[in-house]
Length: 427
Image: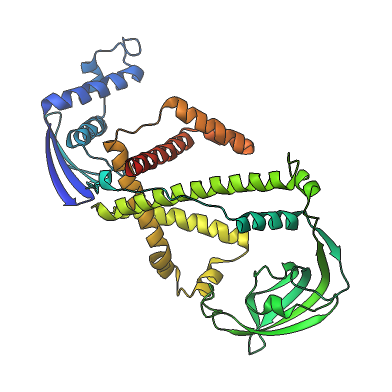
């Protein structure tokens, strides 16, 4: 077998593969043996006829085509191994020359993973910050727990900050036209939560059940929906109910209601411990993100268009599903964000995300290979069991080969990032 390699680009090659009699004889014999298994030849039991007789009864054009396909399948794989290529898709095959069972030449054009020159991650140096938890942070958690344990009671008094109001609201522009996405019914709004644009919640302080309030407001200039940013709008708000919040007393009894705590001090110590652990985890994750970002920036490689486009398609699919859950059409989203069409959305929003995903995946895969990282069978089995416990209703999906490969890939990525973290934080 002779192989000629033509590098079309960093991510695409064309292999010209030439085979002679020695390589073709195996393909020919194999195809004859396969045909002999089922061919009926007078005077012989099935599968026992001499191959020479079998060949004479075959349609020669079809037989030669079968030999060519067999040889291509065998020797294309060998050529890929010889050239040490990591292919990304099925090749485009073109037969250039075939002298029956003597000479075969074909080309295979295929997308490949480009070479990557990694940044020297052994020189990345990071240190973990010392985390602290303030008394205010603990008190904030306590107040949040009190709010969750609070009892909501109907109130005939004017609404104040901290109360809930159940409202119907409709927003109209200066032309008295209803604004898409600016209306709602039976909406529970916590005054002071800052879930609405500035002025909305403040404008409802003092309202009573049954009142109708008109609010003339302006959307912030940096509002996330670009079509509404800076827009003047009039909200008509119907107050259907006002509920005041009755907080539990801050004492040992309240602490005991939340778990195995004898005193309020025990609860506060537990909260401080959990906040400290949470901050440590966040600090570690922040450093890991910094390491990966630095690795991507200091590495040199070419992004394969095919991988980027695949990621764009996946992001688009997931995003459209999310829009369905939110009750928004893609057209409405594009209009809100100021995109003129899907193509502009792809280029300005999805492509950047896709390119980052592919970049991170490529450099981490290269590190995993360089560091000889792998996922042991017992590690994979343990992680799959965890997922099965978490997603019991769809546990069977984790028995499929595709899902197990995906889980193994996630595990390898985690282990690789952990290895980078160890190297960067070691003294």
